[in-house]
Amino acid sequence: MELLSPEILLLLTLVAFIAGFVDAIAGGGGLLTVPALLAAGLPPAQALATNKLQGSFGSLAAALHFVRAGYVTWREMRLAIVCTFVGAAAGALAVQVLERDVLGRVVPVLLIFATLYFVFSPRVSDVHGARRIGDGVFALLIGTCVGFYDGFFGPGTGSFFVLAFIALLGLSARVATARTKILNFTSNFAALLLFVLGGKVLWTVGLPMAAGQFIGGRLGAGVVIGAGARVVKPMLVAVSLLLTLKVALESGGRLW
Image 1 (cartoon, rainbow, N blue to C red):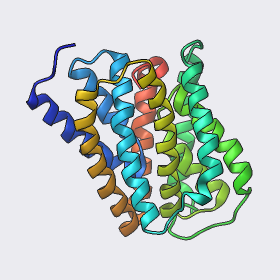
Image 2 (image 1 turned 135 degrees about the vertical axis):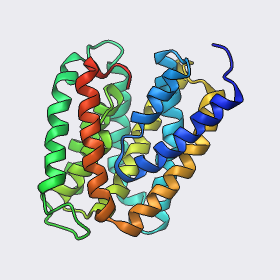
Image 3 (image 1 turned 180 degrees about the vertical axis):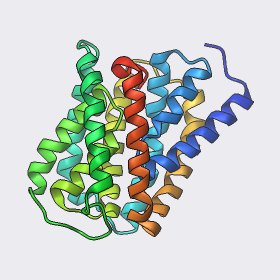
Image 4 (image 1 turned 120 degrees about the vertical axis):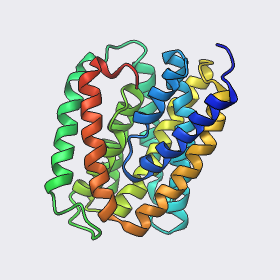
């Protein structure tokens, strides 16, 4: 495709900045960046690949800030990282040979459930709750399955990770979001590698957007640390509702 004008690149970078900020708090940054890339004229495959590139920088920036602030360590997440990476890579490979129509029908129901949980559960707070499973089981079950889902389909991945961390490990909203960003980066990076190998990434667009995402992700992580559940909870509800509407309207979620 033809090179985009500097004005369009600047606008896409601004969209990426906003998306990175929102994504660091509640996920769902793709609600902004994928439509923007498509509107700029990128073919769907290149839009998805370029979105993974710029999104990886946003999730990395947020993850690094949470690690430096002491809310999570790479070491305690290593098994979940491995499982998520394997799951996401498998999902990205499977999507090339399998139909996604079934997930397109099921995901809105799951997102509605997540939204109701975020609204009504007292566990979505700034204090830790009761742990229901161990870290190893969580990594194998949630890391692998949600990672596969992200590589295969995508929308709502952050919401599902946060929901699992709160409901199954009893983590506070801040810590759940911190751990989610590490696994978000993992699944984004796994899918990105496959897109790079397939030659689908448009680097001249993705790298400027990556800069915007990185700054937005860093600022969004700071808001989570400063405000906690007071900001995270309503943002999770809003993003989950928007994702539900998006997936329900677009059959199969092909533009994710």
